Image 1 (cartoon, rainbow, N blue to C red):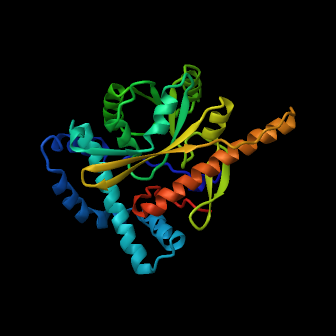
Image 2 (tube, one colour):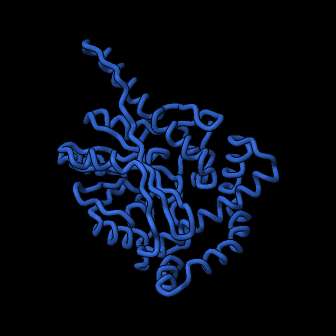
Image 3 (cartoon, rainbow, N blue to C red):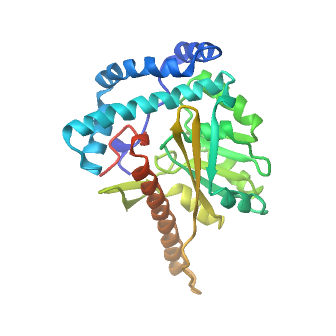
Length: 305
C-alpha cells in the first residue's frame, strides 16, 4: 500500500459551519443553495490545490480530455460534489422526503436479505453512497456500516440519529482495531456489513487492478473478510440524477468458480485467487459506473499508480 495515495480527509466546514447548514436547511431553498455553491467552487479549487489537481489529472489522464475540457470537467465535478454535500445536510435538517429514489438490481438485495447468512455491501466514493442509507430502510437485516472515525461531532451525531432509525449501525475505524470484532460479531449474527472498497479504511493489503486506462490499487481486506465467511458481495452505487432524484444501482459480484480438493498451501492459493477475483470484479463494476457518470468520481487524491 502506498500511504501517499491513502485518503485522510473528512467533511469540511468545521462544527460551526456544519451546524449552520443544518439550521438554514430547515427553511432554505435547496436550488438557491446550489446557485451559491456554483460561485464558491472556484475559490475552493484555488485554495485546495492538491484536491483540484487530483481531479484534473483524473480527467486529463484517465479520460484523455484536452486541457480546457479537463479544467471545465474539474469545475463541474467540484460543483456536483458540493451539491451532494448540501443534499446530505438537507437530510440532517429533516428534509429527506424531498428526494426521489429509483432502484435497479433490487432483486439481488432482496434475495440475500431473505437468507439466514449475512452478506457484504461494497460501497464507493462515487455519487452519494452515504445518502442511500438515509433514504432507504433495512427492514429484514441490520446493516453495519464501517465509517471513517475522524468526522466532527455534528456529522457523527446526525448520521447516527438518522441511520439508527433505518436499522443501520455505524462502526467507526479505530486504532485499537475494535471495529474488527464488531464486524465479526455482525457477520456471525447473519447481519449485513457495508464498507467502502475504493479507499484504504483499515486495510493494509491491496491488489492492483486495470482501472480506467491505468493501474490502481484496491484494498483486499473487505473481500478477504467476505471470503473468510464465504459471503456473497453486492456492489452498491448511489448516483445523483437530478436536483431531487437519486438512482441506486445494485450489482451482484459472483465469486469465482475455483474448486480444488487439496489442502494446505494450495487451499491458501485458491483463497487468494478468489479474493483477487472479487476485488477485480468490484473494480470492473466501479469502472463501468464511472464511465457512465464520470463527473461523480469523488476520490480527491492521486488514485492511480
